[in-house]
Length: 325
Image (cartoon, rainbow, N blue to C red; front, side, top):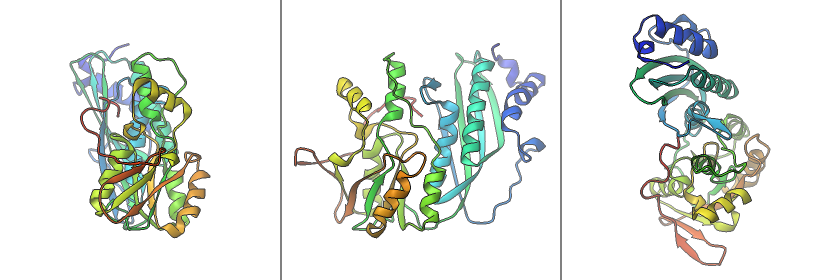
């Protein structure tokens, strides 16, 4: 069954679309009131973020556009030391999209939201002319649990922890597009457990950032610029699975510029490095966490290579991979 323009008319078909798919999967006491706005209660200062998701293909090994839309916004809130509480979800649906795909996406969002402990409390749908595509915007509110976490707060001597293998989401999407058969799965995941444990154990976290578009290289350049520091990376310490490494070797890709959807860097005080490393490795999505470098005085991102040389690592230029998240 396909969605046509009548489902965006605001009439009976729109109501059936909302009730049969979105209310079915997103039900909660705030959303169920179907008011013009969600009325929310928060106790602390909040973090607020928004992001739009245009993934092609919509379904891939390890996830789909719905899971990415929830995890991406949840993780952005966590990176500011906030515990995610509420999300909104806006859908742009092209005429010809199937009910089955939309319901599969809504179910996936519901499962990811449950894992992250957030409620989808408001939403919107628009149906437009097109070829069956589905695009999602999610906005999120989280309560600040730990103040002062910022990409501008890194200090000389801090260490950099990366929560797992690079490039898995990028490789999974690209494999699907190029019809390359392998078992590389997207790492798309909500990182609430990992971040919450770091905060509960009072790790001296100065900065967190999820490694998404632009890859680790771009994220670390943003850190270096905002904190007026130099980032020194050790190539031999970078966690990269053999499957992704082989994929990169064949296609000439650099894992430093490949996107993830379930990895973060945590810049912490040197004194807490070992404790933070163990906490992250014992978390559901952090078993391959590695200490990959440190913060020094200076500028730019420098990589000590496995050949005992060094090179500057710049930001991503141009198009890495269109419509990846």
